[in-house]
Image 1 (tube, rainbow, N blue to C red):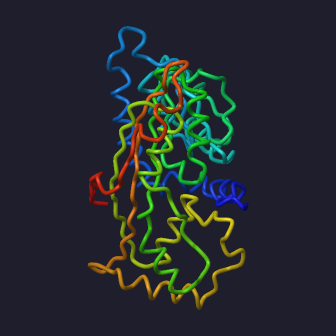
Image 2: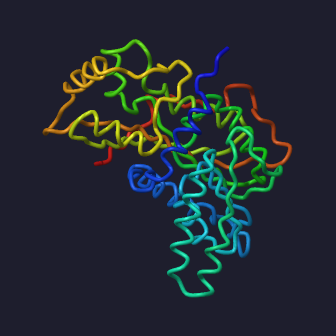
Image 3: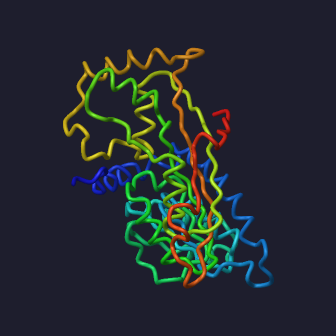
Length: 312
């Protein structure tokens, strides 16, 4: 069976976007801020040195903005910045070095040597079992189709009681764009993102405890379809489906999609909806089974989870 996503295309897209990502990823930075706020829960119930993690991982770190925030939050921790695209890590290094040079000597030396950078795939983490205290991942998992498998890998590397804080896109993301291209082309142009129910079930199936999931909607607005497409390319969010068209869309198809998108125009702008799924969960203690009582441990009916709509 052919995989849904082409990992090589994901790597290529984010490698090409490495120089433009930091300036274009405004939505990603906003979601990142929500996740960083969730880290306040790490210290709850912990005393003394236990309130500070030893090893923190920023998975899908991009240029490393969250990695630097994690290091500032926990200056004594070792922070690892992992990304599939090596140019993203190099871009992060250049930004960090420039920032470090502007700081006083001791602080500059500390920032220049951390966080550490690792080029790695989320599906095969090069980390020791039970070595990570906090695993942080912002808007990375939407490129992975086998969520139970990747969550099993997260459980493997997290210490018992370790904290998982992640976000991804939900199925309502870019529904306007999906619908517009469906009017012009039979080939899919937008990924079929996992629902919050699937995301929550995958966490439970992999053994995570006490998961807390949220859904939010953000709307960004554009003058026209080309403006939206330019931003998607700038953040590396291009079509990475195996079933994608491997030739240019063509002027006629693009014009048909642009005309179809016009039906969504509001106040002279074209909206683009982003459904954000965020989750916080804890790795189980040693010896805890993946599931108790089969599939009846937890269910996540999407209809029962409210959606918070935020002004983009």
